[in-house]
Image (tube, rainbow, N blue to C red; front, side, top):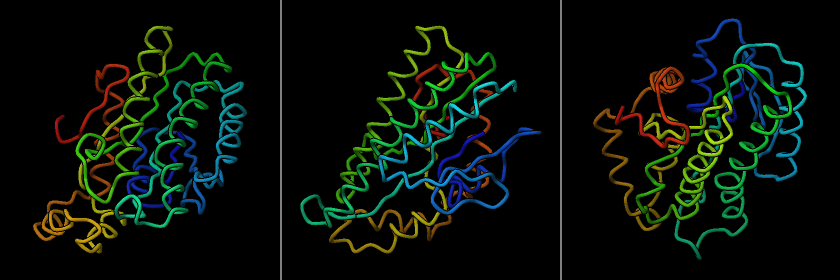
Length: 237
Protein backbone atom coordinates (compact mmCIF):
# COMPACT_ATOMS: atom_id res chain seq x y z
CA UNK A 1 0.00 0.00 0.00
CA UNK A 2 1.49 3.32 -1.09
CA UNK A 3 0.10 6.59 0.26
CA UNK A 4 1.48 9.91 -0.89
CA UNK A 5 1.29 12.57 1.79
CA UNK A 6 0.85 10.15 4.71
CA UNK A 7 2.67 12.54 7.03
CA UNK A 8 -0.40 14.75 7.59
CA UNK A 9 -4.15 15.12 7.27
CA UNK A 10 -6.18 12.49 5.45
CA UNK A 11 -3.02 10.74 4.28
CA UNK A 12 -1.91 10.20 7.88
CA UNK A 13 -5.36 8.91 8.81
CA UNK A 14 -5.27 6.50 5.86
CA UNK A 15 -1.92 5.15 7.01
CA UNK A 16 -3.31 4.60 10.52
CA UNK A 17 -6.41 2.75 9.31
CA UNK A 18 -5.09 0.46 6.55
CA UNK A 19 -7.54 -2.48 6.65
CA UNK A 20 -5.24 -5.11 5.18
CA UNK A 21 -3.07 -7.46 7.23
CA UNK A 22 -0.33 -8.22 6.61
CA UNK A 23 0.54 -5.21 4.47
CA UNK A 24 3.53 -3.04 3.73
CA UNK A 25 2.49 0.59 4.11
CA UNK A 26 4.78 2.98 2.26
CA UNK A 27 4.61 6.77 2.61
CA UNK A 28 5.72 9.02 -0.24
CA UNK A 29 6.44 12.44 1.22
CA UNK A 30 9.15 14.83 2.31
CA UNK A 31 9.04 14.12 6.04
CA UNK A 32 7.79 10.54 6.50
CA UNK A 33 5.00 9.11 8.63
CA UNK A 34 5.23 7.03 11.84
CA UNK A 35 4.75 3.31 11.37
CA UNK A 36 5.36 3.34 7.61
CA UNK A 37 8.20 2.75 5.24
CA UNK A 38 9.32 6.02 3.72
CA UNK A 39 10.12 7.04 0.17
CA UNK A 40 11.51 10.59 0.49
CA UNK A 41 10.12 12.80 -2.26
CA UNK A 42 9.33 16.46 -2.78
CA UNK A 43 6.52 16.10 -5.30
CA UNK A 44 6.75 19.76 -6.31
CA UNK A 45 10.06 18.76 -7.94
CA UNK A 46 9.55 16.90 -11.24
CA UNK A 47 12.82 15.03 -10.68
CA UNK A 48 11.12 13.19 -7.80
CA UNK A 49 8.42 11.76 -10.04
CA UNK A 50 10.90 9.57 -11.92
CA UNK A 51 12.39 8.37 -8.64
CA UNK A 52 8.95 7.35 -7.35
CA UNK A 53 8.22 5.51 -10.61
CA UNK A 54 11.50 3.63 -10.30
CA UNK A 55 10.48 2.67 -6.76
CA UNK A 56 7.13 1.33 -8.04
CA UNK A 57 8.95 -0.67 -10.72
CA UNK A 58 11.46 -2.11 -8.26
CA UNK A 59 8.87 -3.09 -5.64
CA UNK A 60 6.29 -4.58 -8.00
CA UNK A 61 8.86 -6.52 -10.00
CA UNK A 62 8.59 -10.06 -8.67
CA UNK A 63 5.89 -9.08 -6.15
CA UNK A 64 3.78 -12.16 -5.39
CA UNK A 65 1.12 -10.53 -3.20
CA UNK A 66 -2.54 -10.40 -4.11
CA UNK A 67 -3.19 -6.65 -3.80
CA UNK A 68 -1.41 -3.44 -4.79
CA UNK A 69 -2.87 -0.05 -3.83
CA UNK A 70 -1.72 3.52 -4.46
CA UNK A 71 -3.64 6.35 -2.79
CA UNK A 72 -2.52 9.79 -3.91
CA UNK A 73 -3.27 12.35 -1.18
CA UNK A 74 -0.49 14.90 -1.57
CA UNK A 75 -1.78 18.36 -2.29
CA UNK A 76 -1.37 21.98 -1.33
CA UNK A 77 -3.85 24.83 -1.05
CA UNK A 78 -1.44 27.75 -0.85
CA UNK A 79 -1.01 30.29 -2.20
CA UNK A 80 -4.60 31.30 -1.59
CA UNK A 81 -5.36 34.49 -3.46
CA UNK A 82 -6.18 35.81 -6.86
CA UNK A 83 -4.21 34.77 -9.96
CA UNK A 84 -1.90 37.62 -10.86
CA UNK A 85 -1.62 38.76 -7.25
CA UNK A 86 -0.02 35.87 -5.33
CA UNK A 87 3.64 34.84 -5.27
CA UNK A 88 4.57 33.34 -8.64
CA UNK A 89 7.00 30.70 -7.34
CA UNK A 90 4.42 29.42 -4.85
CA UNK A 91 1.81 29.39 -7.63
CA UNK A 92 4.07 27.28 -9.85
CA UNK A 93 4.68 24.80 -7.00
CA UNK A 94 0.90 24.50 -6.56
CA UNK A 95 0.44 23.74 -10.26
CA UNK A 96 3.19 21.11 -10.22
CA UNK A 97 1.92 19.34 -7.10
CA UNK A 98 -1.83 19.49 -7.69
CA UNK A 99 -2.02 19.03 -11.44
CA UNK A 100 1.15 17.49 -12.87
CA UNK A 101 2.34 15.20 -10.06
CA UNK A 102 -0.88 13.13 -9.84
CA UNK A 103 -0.75 12.38 -13.56
CA UNK A 104 2.96 11.51 -13.55
CA UNK A 105 2.72 9.30 -10.44
CA UNK A 106 -0.49 7.66 -11.60
CA UNK A 107 1.15 6.82 -14.90
CA UNK A 108 4.20 5.50 -13.05
CA UNK A 109 2.10 3.17 -10.90
CA UNK A 110 0.17 1.83 -13.90
CA UNK A 111 3.40 1.37 -15.87
CA UNK A 112 4.89 -0.62 -13.00
CA UNK A 113 1.84 -2.89 -12.88
CA UNK A 114 2.15 -3.55 -16.61
CA UNK A 115 5.91 -4.14 -16.41
CA UNK A 116 5.41 -6.61 -13.54
CA UNK A 117 2.52 -8.33 -15.33
CA UNK A 118 0.79 -8.06 -11.97
CA UNK A 119 -1.94 -10.69 -11.68
CA UNK A 120 -3.55 -9.55 -8.42
CA UNK A 121 -6.07 -6.81 -7.75
CA UNK A 122 -4.85 -3.23 -8.00
CA UNK A 123 -6.43 0.08 -7.04
CA UNK A 124 -5.37 3.63 -7.80
CA UNK A 125 -7.33 6.12 -5.69
CA UNK A 126 -6.84 9.87 -6.09
CA UNK A 127 -8.28 12.55 -3.84
CA UNK A 128 -10.22 15.27 -5.58
CA UNK A 129 -12.47 18.12 -4.44
CA UNK A 130 -15.69 19.91 -5.21
CA UNK A 131 -13.40 22.76 -6.25
CA UNK A 132 -12.82 20.79 -9.48
CA UNK A 133 -16.26 21.84 -10.70
CA UNK A 134 -17.23 24.84 -8.52
CA UNK A 135 -15.12 28.00 -8.93
CA UNK A 136 -13.74 29.41 -5.69
CA UNK A 137 -12.12 32.82 -6.05
CA UNK A 138 -8.62 32.52 -4.62
CA UNK A 139 -8.25 28.84 -5.53
CA UNK A 140 -7.59 29.04 -9.27
CA UNK A 141 -4.56 26.71 -9.28
CA UNK A 142 -6.02 24.32 -6.68
CA UNK A 143 -9.36 23.99 -8.49
CA UNK A 144 -7.68 23.57 -11.86
CA UNK A 145 -5.42 20.88 -10.41
CA UNK A 146 -8.37 18.89 -9.08
CA UNK A 147 -10.18 19.24 -12.41
CA UNK A 148 -7.07 17.80 -14.07
CA UNK A 149 -7.10 14.88 -11.63
CA UNK A 150 -10.75 14.15 -12.42
CA UNK A 151 -10.22 14.08 -16.17
CA UNK A 152 -7.04 12.01 -15.90
CA UNK A 153 -8.93 9.44 -13.81
CA UNK A 154 -11.79 9.28 -16.31
CA UNK A 155 -9.38 8.69 -19.20
CA UNK A 156 -7.02 6.30 -17.40
CA UNK A 157 -9.95 4.30 -16.00
CA UNK A 158 -11.44 3.93 -19.48
CA UNK A 159 -8.07 2.82 -20.80
CA UNK A 160 -7.74 0.16 -18.10
CA UNK A 161 -11.21 -1.08 -18.99
CA UNK A 162 -10.40 -1.23 -22.71
CA UNK A 163 -7.17 -3.12 -22.10
CA UNK A 164 -8.89 -5.57 -19.76
CA UNK A 165 -6.45 -4.75 -16.94
CA UNK A 166 -7.10 -5.28 -13.26
CA UNK A 167 -6.33 -1.83 -11.86
CA UNK A 168 -9.38 0.23 -10.93
CA UNK A 169 -8.76 3.98 -11.12
CA UNK A 170 -11.08 6.23 -9.09
CA UNK A 171 -11.13 9.85 -7.91
CA UNK A 172 -12.98 10.69 -4.70
CA UNK A 173 -13.82 13.95 -2.97
CA UNK A 174 -13.76 13.31 0.80
CA UNK A 175 -15.84 16.33 1.77
CA UNK A 176 -14.82 18.86 4.40
CA UNK A 177 -12.43 17.15 6.83
CA UNK A 178 -10.67 18.53 9.92
CA UNK A 179 -7.14 18.80 8.53
CA UNK A 180 -4.33 21.37 8.67
CA UNK A 181 -5.43 22.54 5.21
CA UNK A 182 -8.81 23.55 6.64
CA UNK A 183 -7.02 25.54 9.34
CA UNK A 184 -5.12 27.41 6.63
CA UNK A 185 -8.35 28.16 4.80
CA UNK A 186 -10.11 29.54 7.88
CA UNK A 187 -7.18 31.85 8.58
CA UNK A 188 -7.45 33.65 5.25
CA UNK A 189 -8.61 37.22 4.72
CA UNK A 190 -11.88 37.60 2.82
CA UNK A 191 -10.14 39.90 0.35
CA UNK A 192 -8.03 36.97 -0.88
CA UNK A 193 -10.66 34.27 -0.34
CA UNK A 194 -14.20 35.69 -0.39
CA UNK A 195 -15.85 32.39 0.65
CA UNK A 196 -13.83 32.04 3.86
CA UNK A 197 -16.97 32.62 5.93
CA UNK A 198 -18.50 29.38 4.63
CA UNK A 199 -15.58 27.36 5.97
CA UNK A 200 -15.52 29.18 9.28
CA UNK A 201 -19.22 28.44 9.70
CA UNK A 202 -18.72 24.75 8.91
CA UNK A 203 -16.05 24.56 11.59
CA UNK A 204 -18.10 26.50 14.15
CA UNK A 205 -21.11 24.23 13.62
CA UNK A 206 -19.05 21.03 14.01
CA UNK A 207 -19.60 19.87 10.43
CA UNK A 208 -15.98 18.94 9.66
CA UNK A 209 -15.43 15.19 9.55
CA UNK A 210 -12.83 13.43 11.64
CA UNK A 211 -9.96 12.37 9.33
CA UNK A 212 -10.04 8.77 10.58
CA UNK A 213 -13.76 8.47 9.79
CA UNK A 214 -13.15 9.81 6.30
CA UNK A 215 -10.20 7.43 5.90
CA UNK A 216 -12.30 4.39 6.81
CA UNK A 217 -14.89 5.41 4.24
CA UNK A 218 -12.18 5.85 1.63
CA UNK A 219 -10.83 2.36 2.29
CA UNK A 220 -14.39 1.07 2.02
CA UNK A 221 -14.53 2.26 -1.59
CA UNK A 222 -12.19 -0.55 -2.59
CA UNK A 223 -15.04 -2.98 -1.94
CA UNK A 224 -17.64 -0.91 -3.79
CA UNK A 225 -18.71 -1.75 -7.33
CA UNK A 226 -17.56 1.58 -8.78
CA UNK A 227 -16.96 1.97 -12.49
CA UNK A 228 -13.37 2.23 -13.63
CA UNK A 229 -12.71 5.95 -14.08
CA UNK A 230 -15.45 6.98 -11.64
CA UNK A 231 -15.26 10.43 -10.01
CA UNK A 232 -17.31 10.36 -6.81
CA UNK A 233 -18.03 12.30 -3.63
CA UNK A 234 -18.13 10.45 -0.30
CA UNK A 235 -21.13 12.56 0.71
CA UNK A 236 -23.15 11.08 -2.15
CA UNK A 237 -22.39 7.42 -1.37
